Image 1 (spheres, rainbow, N blue to C red):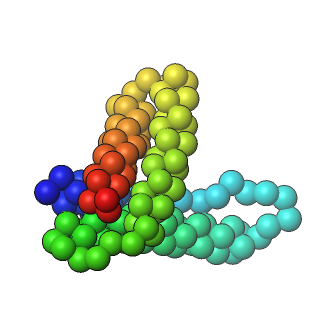
Image 2 (cartoon, rainbow, N blue to C red):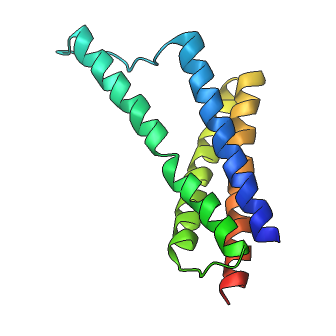
Length: 138
C-alpha cells in the first residue's frame, strides 16, 4: 500500500515538473544557453532546444519508477531495475537539493524557496520508495 502511494506521489511530482517546464517555456520562451565565442545565434538556439528536449527525456526514468511501483504494488513480479533507478534518482535529487540550498544562501526569495522544496520532496519520495520497494522485494 505504501509503495503504491509513493509511486503515485512520484508520478504526481513528474507531472508537476512537466507542467512547470511547459508553462515556463510558454511564458518565457526556450531558455537560452549562455553565448560562447565562435557560436552563431542559430547554433545557440539549436543547443538550447536540444538541452530542453534532454531535460524532458530525463523525466522518463521517473515515470518508469512510478509506473513500475504501481504495478509491483498490484502484484506484478518485481525486478531490481526500479530499485536501482530509485537510488540513482535519489542521488540526483540530493545534488539538486544541495544546489538549491546554495542558491538560497545567495538570494532569499520565493523562487529560491520553491526551488528548494521541489528537490527536498523528491529526495524524501525516492528514499521512502526505495525502503518500501525493498520490503516488497523480500
